[in-house]
Length: 356
Image (cartoon, rainbow, N blue to C red):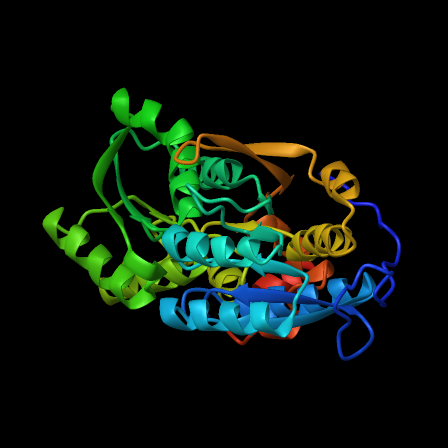
C-alpha cells in the first residue's frame, strides 16, 4: 500500500504571486465529480473526504457534481475557471468531455488533475486513482474463488461504461485471470456487455436478456461495481437463483457489503477513497503554490495514455478484495457503519463476524 505522507500546510494568501484566495482564507480549487446514479461513493465518500483533505492542506475547495450531464460538467468547469480556481480536479463522465474542460483550464494557466478516471488522449497534468487493472484482476480472482471446482461453468460479464477508461482497465484486469480459463474450457463465456453510463437499470435488463439467451443458465457473474451487482442480483432473485450464483462487485458500498453478508454477492473491491482524496489534495496544494517539484515527488507512478501517446505522472493506490470473511475491514476503517449493513437479514452474519 502506498503511504502518503503529509506535505505540510500550504497556507492561504497570495504568497506574493497573485494566488487567488478562497472565501475561508484558502487557495481556491475546483472539483467536479461525475454523477450519483451508478454509485453511492461520489457523494457519500469522495465529496466529504476531498473537502476535508483539501481544507487540511490549506485549500478552499468548491466541489460540485455534474449528475451525469456532460453540459452541466462543462458549465460547472466554466464557472470555476471564471471564479479564479488555481487548480481543477475532474472525475469526468467521458474522456471527450474531460479533455475539453482540461484544455479550457490549461489555456488559462490552471493545472488539471484527473481524479479516479484518466481522460484518454487528454492533456491533464496528473492522475490520481487506484491500480484499476488490479481491481479487475481481483474481480476475476473473486469470481473463480466463488465458482470453485465447476468445470465448464457459464459466466456472464456486465461491464462498466465504454466511455470510462476505468471500465476498460477493470475489464483488462479481469481478463488476465479469466481469459486463460475461457481458452482452456474451464469456464465458458456466455455473454458480455458494457453498460452505457454505468446505468444500473440498463445493466439489470441487459443481464436478464443474456441470461434468457443462455437458456436461463449462469454459474457466475462479473459485475463491474456494486450498483450493477445489485441489479444483477434483483434479476437472479426473480428466477430463484440469488445466493447460488457468485456475483462480483466494486466500491465496498453499504448495499454491496449487506448483499455479501446475505450471501447474494460473493465479493467487492475496497478502495480506501480517503487515501485517494488525500493524494489529490496534496497534489492540488503543491500545484496551487506553483511547486511542480513537490507535485512530481507525490506522483511517482506513471500511467500510459495510448491515445495521447504519453506517460501521465500518477498516484496509484492499492485495492483490496473483500469477501464475507473480511467485510469487517471496511467497517473498522470507518467507510461504512455497522448499522448500515447489519439489518434483520444480516444480523446473524454480523454477530458471527464480530461486526457491531
